[in-house]
Length: 394
Ligand SMILES: Cc1cc2nc3c(=O)[nH]c(=O)nc-3n(C[C@H](O)[C@H](O)[C@H](O)COP(=O)(O)OP(=O)(O)OC[C@H]3O[C@@H](n4cnc5c(N)ncnc54)[C@H](O)[C@@H]3O)c2cc1C
Image 1 (cartoon, rainbow, N blue to C red):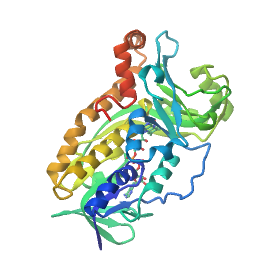
Image 2 (image 1 turned 180 degrees about the vertical axis):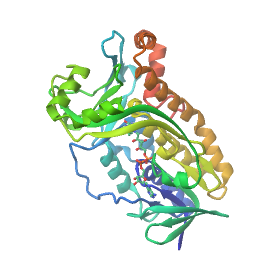
Image 3 (image 1 turned 30 degrees about the vertical axis):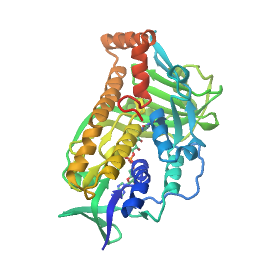
Image 4 (image 1 turned 45 degrees about the vertical axis):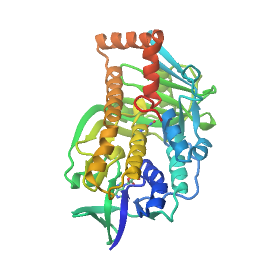
């Protein structure tokens, strides 16, 4: 048996970001952090046409600047200079411009594999011990923390356990933490496509009666496609041959970037809004997708989790109480509750409003998009939400 002051279960984007955000405090306070992850990160990054990516908001850039990682991430992050929001077959459209918002970019698109690589490379193994490839199979509550049972037949005792094992967290269930699930009845089809024309940093959010789609600018003039459709229709699109798939996509997206020429591996994600009913218990925090999984179309899920992560790291670093102290963990949650409610609400409402073919709603959203373009304060509010700057100043 071994012990740690703090164990992070899951070394995905959220778990690894928390480890990074806590490094300085750990050095100063003598904390021993253990990061447990079943899939070993490659020490060498290999670019791939098929890689999945994440849109980082401008707010997330500011967080990574603070953590000293932005320069590394920026080497392969494509800036979003403008976002074109439109409704297929209708008049309403609006354009958000980085210049108008007074920022160098509205956001950035980076491949998940690149983000993961940058994060793991930045971890100081003197402070953050990796247990990898290792999986946590059981969690047992102790008086002063948790005992984690690992799949290598060993166990680890810790004063604070951070559950960052993703949206399908089996451990959350094992601990009896309930979830509120609201299925969207849709799946997201994700792939990279290459357009004939240069994307010039443009991102497109396009709403159609069959579901919203986003096309985000990536390095090497690729675009990351997120296309939401009814689950059965998304399955059908997944199976189409490349030519037919590109033909259907072109029909829905139009020719804003010329002919679409190539598509990489396609992946499907069934979509639900999932929220854990408890995020903190004494000696335990549920973080990242394990705490809330959002619809991907508004690009808010990871950005919200990164703000949670920074807030948690700040509250833990400022507290003089022992790690795991319940009042400290509640303070973290209080600090993030408004941001979580607004962000979850924003992405849920936008998604439901724009996934609906009812005439009243389509007329309403048409007016909404027109209104956004005509009313600078409304457009500015929308842009600040999209940039991840809605609640707190970073
Ligand atoms: C199609 C799609 C597109 C998206 N696009 C965006 C976007 O543009 N912008 C945005 O902000 N968000 C986006 N998101 C959301 C974003 O992907 C998630 O918010 C983010 O991946 C959550 O990270 P996480 O570390 O919490 O979970 P995960 O990425 O799922 O990581 C969990 C980690 O835990 C590990 N693990 C699992 N079980 C155990 C165990 N028992 N023991 C130890 N480790 C374990 C796993 O191996 C994994 O590495 C998108 C989501 C989807 C589905």
